[in-house]
Length: 144
Image 1 (cartoon, rainbow, N blue to C red):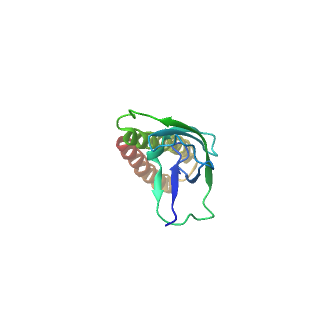
Image 2: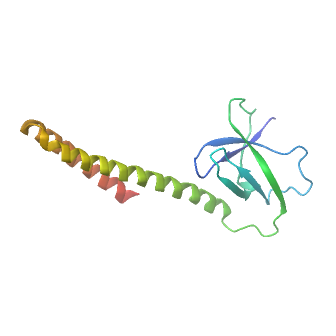
Image 3: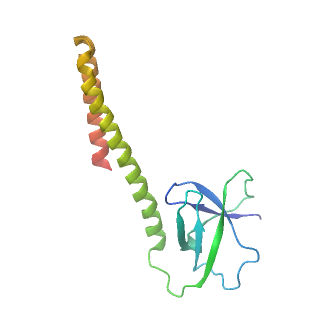
């Protein structure tokens, strides 16, 4: 059955099909560390067992990444390597969300400064929207 390995970049969170060197080195093992360079510029060194194996024919439209190097088998792999890998992805995602929320807060403050130029009726409507928006942003930042 055809299959392929899937790599998720921890920086841009895009998914790529992994292209292995041909021929595969004799020292390759699932505990080998491999180096992959993502098109976003992120160079990643991870264990081969951290790549997801997809049990279907590869899609020709899926972007690919090339394995740059393969190290020999690591006799004692890092404990909790999978959890640390996934935690790195989630931490970067949280940082991106936090940055977006900061930009939203700046936009809301700038919008509130411009509100004073509008009529009283519009001012009441916009202030209600602003209060709801600030409450939503505050709730989201407490969760993140």
